[in-house]
Amino acid sequence: MSVLTALHERNSHSKLMEPGPDASQLQAIVQAGLRAPDHGRLRPWHFLAIQGDRREALGELFTKALKLSRPGATEAELTKARAAPLRAPVIVAGLLKPVDHPKVPRVEQVAAVACALHGMSLAAEAQGFGTMWRTGWYAQDAIVIDGLGGSPGDEVIGFLYLGARKGDSKPLAAPEFEGSFSLY
Ligand SMILES: Cc1cc2nc3c(=O)[nH]c(=O)nc-3n(C[C@H](O)[C@H](O)[C@H](O)COP(=O)(O)O)c2cc1C
Image (tube, rainbow, N blue to C red; front, side):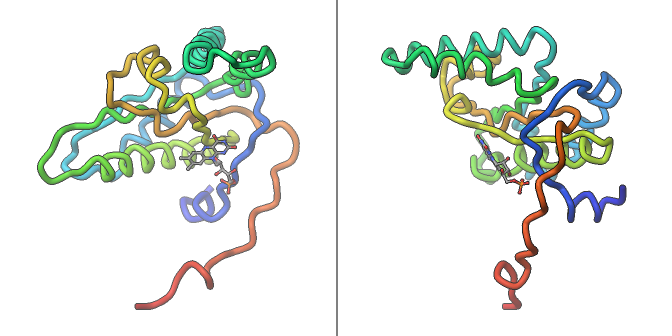
């Protein structure tokens, strides 16, 4: 798959199943992300792969965070939170670890992490996997961030779900070039 094809045809796939990327495929995915543009080369990030039974541990973390942040959460909501990480064989969590810098504001550091995650999704697609970028309330929850090894002020920019595609891909959205681009 050419880079241009990957960029033109990337398409999220919400239903993912085994097999996920193996260790060397995952390394290729992460390395693609690490080539992201990054103002000042601050590397304001950490990426964590969650796979196998660690996904259950992540589900427990989501459940604990939900119980504490919303004591009135229903059993159905708790069950959904517990099962959320089981929606793919591998998840890469992209954590923003902002660096205090006189010239590089937080928004640019968020952009760097987002570019990295996008690069990872393209590298996964190029190896035949489906991907789905998710956040949800978990991404900014202090208990979730702490449980992932983050510090106060850190934030999950995306949980990139990775795996084999289950079912057909959804149709690509119609091209939006005309409405989204013009000459100044
Ligand atoms: C920062 C970010 C967070 C997102 N969070 C979610 C999410 O929590 N749940 C969801 O269904 N889609 C989420 N999406 C959108 C999907 O990943 C996907 O882009 C969308 O469904 C459109 O499909 P497409 O990527 O194939 O165009 C998020 C996208 C971004 C960039």
